[in-house]
Image: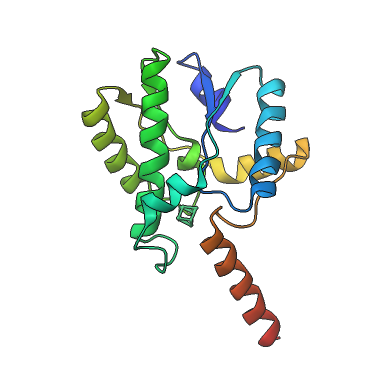
Length: 175
Ligand code: SF4
């Protein structure tokens, strides 16, 4: 919600919701429904990708046991961005970008590197952004509270859900 007005300063935008990583399905639907509500509120067209968890599992195969920020995440994000670029190309857009740069848990350098690789492979331009800048993350939290938009408390995949649950258990144990 914070990135949309910023992008609009220079671009016409279309949203694309492609998140085969999200587990379980009811969480996927919850996030999708709120993105749909936002798209209506912010007046942009939203395209919906396939929910294909099996394809996602193939993309991170062999790296499931690693933690957040690891090669597992790099592959997961590569998968989403690559599919986004292909969608942008098939819809004849000039470029693609990601709202992930609003997250303090995602490194801009890694996103830029992946974006550049995909740009080279697909021949569609990756728009480098940093939606964390100028307090962007805090702004997005404030906006979601004001608009009563759901904010997830784990990244998305079943492994990040487990990591969150383990963390909470540890916290309870340690008082
Ligand atoms: S923690 Fe997030 S980025 Fe990493 S693999 Fe899971 S869903 Fe993807």
